[in-house]
Image 1 (cartoon, helix red, strand yellow):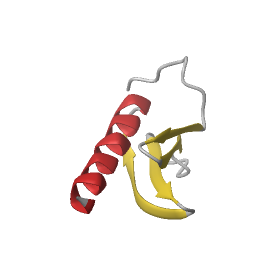
Image 2 (cartoon, rainbow, N blue to C red; image 1 turned 90 degrees about the horizontal axis):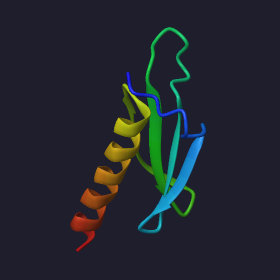
Image 3 (spheres, one colour; image 1 turned 60 degrees about the horizontal axis):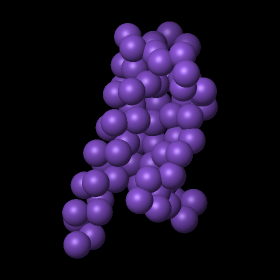
Length: 71
């Protein structure tokens, strides 16, 4: 599992006008990181990945898909 020690959790960022939020999996019995993307206080997508970088990359990809669907 890749956990970049320079990434502070919870991780919050803005990408293309969407908010990205990544935190450790709230299920204490399973490892990983929960990610979500939102816009205007509405959660548009979320998921679970094995490491922080994968969670951030997956959130970016989900935003790109939403952007492509909107065009």
